[in-house]
Image 1 (cartoon, rainbow, N blue to C red):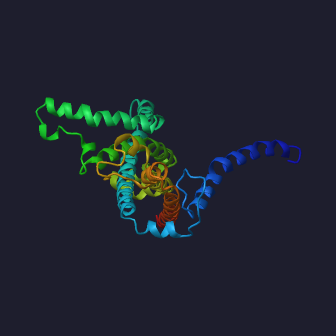
Image 2 (tube, helix red, strand yellow):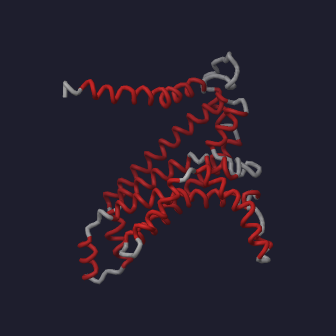
Image 3 (tube, one colour):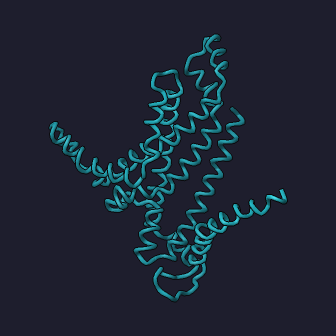
Length: 288
């Protein structure tokens, strides 16, 4: 180990320096600016203490963004995990062209989310309205991204289509760890497929379910690319997420320090939610 120590340090130190320079240092700098009134452009700024943090709790636009973000994250997390687990169970069964279908379902995870968003933007705004217009269903011939009532649905559809792929892979990995003799024993006992799922499949993949739920909730709470490609927070800020609000107001609206405080608060919120999820779901694993 002593002879190889130099090699190990040469591998670890550059990675550590890059991680600190491009991740840790910007985070610390953002926390520092959250206690100032810097607008992101001026050379001078003053320290204002916790003034930005106090104003965040009084800002109605931030509360509206929090409301949309949490509703979107909860709904999408449930849909993605239900759909991905269902598909994974089908892909784990003895079917023809199994590997082909696995590759097809994994394809969305390879594509850029921004590109996917722009493609679906064209579909929602042009292809679908024209299609319904041609088949004389004029009540459906409208762009859902242009309405405050249905714009969220387009974001959910795109997110579910893209995010399901990664969860399918994790669930497939979990399903393949289940011994087949457990299913053979249950079939001999006359257990139905539903009972097999609840008493064998789901308890055995509980750790994978925990990871998927935590990662899904965290990723969807930070929804950004979909908003950029589909709605830009509109119409009438009905799809304004916290991440997109921080970006637009912080870099374009001259509220860099104020939105830095908002981002620090949101970071703490995400950490708390992730810890609560882990504690609850891991306790549930033990009960299963």
